[in-house]
Amino acid sequence: MPWAEVIEELESKLVGTLKGTFTPMDGVPFFRVMYPPGEEREALRQFRLLSERLKQQGWQVECISLTRVLQGALASLLSCKVEELSERLKKEERIRDRKELKSSLAEHLPLEMARIITKHIESKGLVKKGIAFLVRTGAIYPFMRPSHLLVHLEGKVKCVIVIAYPGTSVGAFLDSETAGLYGGYYRGEIIQWR
Image: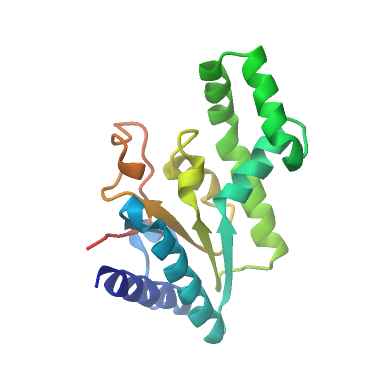
């Protein structure tokens, strides 16, 4: 069963990182867990179960929905409340070309989302002995790829980051085309789907 192997490898590497017996690739405590996009529901369940196990072992763990982070970042960038976001986006689409709006948001979203995630992690007191699971990663596509978010988190967060990656090969997020020569940030550990 693929999930059992993937979660076992992830848990072993996470605990090893927290105990100082394992050093992630490049020395960056980021873990990208790859799985087929059709496995999203099971991925959420598996990450929740792993989070609970790690908490029972005494580790600090937080699951962060990138859907909510995206909503907060969009609301911040558009100067509105989350509840007003749908109407505000419709208004922006009437004023600006959809492609221009998407491009403008894609330029500013990674930094704003990283700011929100960093603030959340700090507010929860997650330190080097903590783990933040970033789930619902598909919500950020097509505005950005996970690599664009990770580049803004490196050096700003002290805890281990696990990012759900609905794709079956590095750079092919949500079965899209690969990120290309300048589109990827692949530091840290990659847990491959089997």
